[in-house]
Length: 497
Image (tube, rainbow, N blue to C red; front, side):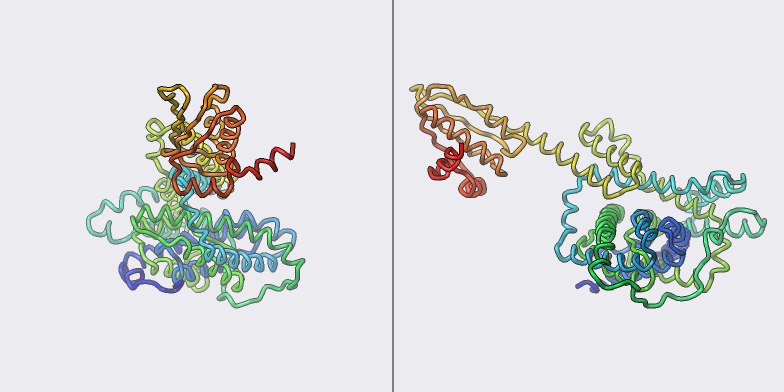
């Protein structure tokens, strides 16, 4: 059931979840505003979306403790739609995005995560860490020296505060960093950039609104390409983030439930005047590092975000951006897999290429889906190439010199089919050929076609051919698609030339 959650998910870590959720809520505010600006919409669109998506996924998500909200990856996909058609079409696309994600969940597309190799996940994590750090650079360029001092001081608090006895383990250091730097900035009246400078905070609660667009085929043609892209990127980032949080917390998650949850959250966001969103690796890592583990942390993050921006906007607007930059730099440092650099010397070249190319494509294009696609494609090609090398054929002639046995060992598929064919001597004058497939497996149409060609060639040279040792799976695909034992099929093929 989508809404079924264990009591442990909500009440198993109350203090840790509440404090972590508070830290995440503070970190979400400037991000949501920034992503709204990227998409070309009012800051409240991103803030309402972040509140709505976080609260809905808290109840329905397949990964407790993961934070979902408005994200930069999704915002980049909305720019053209907003510019050419306006906000109402974005809201309609957000609702359609949710419907497509729910459909994906019921089609169990979350299971496709099993095809994403560890090297692709590592590359994805490293790329996101780099992007998170790069996103902080505008706040550190062309600013006064006070900002650098505040940022360095914030990092000092984040890393040194946990070393204090008792209290260091009780209160999340990112929260202490935000409170201390805000107090210093206010007390010294420093002229530095604050959250209030990012954009005007909303002063009303979100209300239900149906997207004001014509309900016709033309509207669907406009929003469907955008909704499809948003659905794919949203699911991909959410499932990858869930995998990363699984590793950090050593707990499992339900990927198909997460697809449905993200869909439900986006539908809700669209009807409450928000933009589409997905899981956020940065905020999810902040949550986990701050002690958040359960659904309560996600719920608190979303709820406190709305309370802060609507009712406490005067206080929130004075938080210096340097404090939040410190937190995000901590996230980028903690997210990056430093071990992967050491492993470059130990891991195979193919694994390293997959990881590095995933990083390069994601960072270069800022397109998470494209980076993961390239990584998965490369990993698949390297795997196919590696498996094909393990296929070989032994041959032996019997004592009479009239029977040659070919023993095929390994996997026969599109990449090893040519090697399989090259192992046979079709010009040898022999009475009988035995092809022993006891230790072989046929995977696809290409491999079946190769076997057909081998058998037909030997028969053309006058040899009697016997195939032995087929396992059940190989026998099934050969019986269905093979033609070497079907004279009428061979006649059709030969008759066509």
